[in-house]
Length: 130
Image 1 (spheres, rainbow, N blue to C red):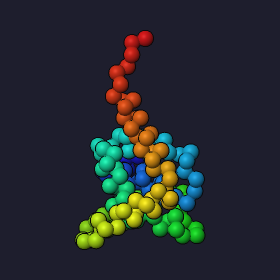
Image 2 (spheres, rainbow, N blue to C red):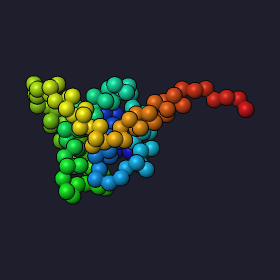
Image 3 (cartoon, rainbow, N blue to C red):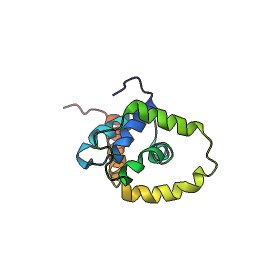
């Protein structure tokens, strides 16, 4: 999945799948693996979702005919990078509202976080001799 993207950009693309206008419950394994392989802890992944991905991708779930096959990684990277380059003094004010909206818009996020934790714990377990 690398396609020349940094770890953070790979996380953006994986998280953007949760904002597709289709049922993604069956395809959480791929994003879970990308997030688990990232260097970010769960709290940082929460922040990336709320501060980077949500503002760019949430409107896809609000429109009548949103993207359902996948966001273009380069366009997503460009939009998030452009937005992050601008100063938003009231950004912290909106976080509680985004968090609330996220629960209804992207109900898969708690399950995805659990999968990430499970994958990371499985990777740390020593293999048993058998």
